[in-house]
Image 1 (tube, rainbow, N blue to C red):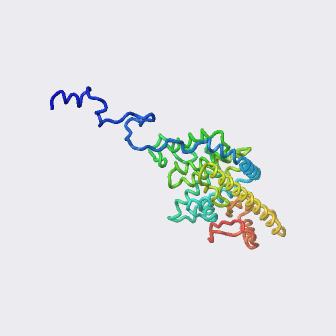
Image 2 (cartoon, one colour):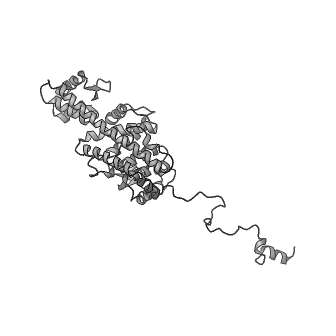
Image 3 (cartoon, rainbow, N blue to C red):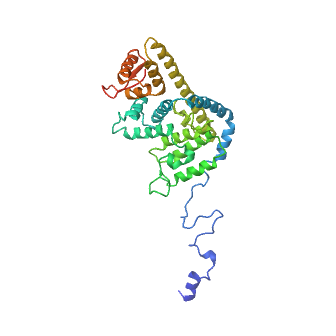
Length: 348
């Protein structure tokens, strides 16, 4: 090989079509620097708020009906005692646990929440997750005030912790919330639910997504934070979460399931009211004010211990215990711990 031939082959004088070993011309939608020449995933947005807006417009009647029913629940809870909020939150968290796989009955979850009893090594994590759900459903700042705080995550960039499959999951969800500002809060909640099920950590994303959506949707309350703190989603089953296909199919199942769950919550409050009326009639022959006050406590709180009853009624421990035994004997309440000490009662 001569020096001239080497210059033609490897130098700058060779024809471009002869340089077969170099990459071809860059396409219009070219690869980023350093990317391998492999097929790339589509860059289409996973959740487009405009698609959800079209679905919302198509379901405006159903959405208006759900908003009206939620308004009734919101009004009922506006002046209700704190125990009534806890009663509904415990039921919602219990039903969510059955959907997410932890399968905690209402009595077991209530006992664990009040006395921290009933947990085993196998159920410890499940109770912890359900306890988080109860706390978020009964108070605290809503998701709109900060996703990291609501989900008990450190702000991204402050801790070297995995935030989920994608370390930028919270940032992605925050951007999605900002882009969805024109949507109805119920629609926003549905979109956030399906988004966090993809972005969130696998060990908690289902429960977190549901609680996130339930709290966010409650911003439709006329007096946010004073009435219903969450939109019920699971009290009538898990159909709310089972929408498949595009945004309209998902939102249809979501609104229908949330409507049934909200009606179930209203029915539960009606049942408690009926029990209170029945119980007052059943103790009309008893003297003193303690029986009536005790019945009011049971109507307000899902579980009642003797110290709680003593505090709420202002009666002595002996009077409270005597009336608890009387209510239990008449079938109005039942003791659920089966213990001789630290006993707890609920509506029978």
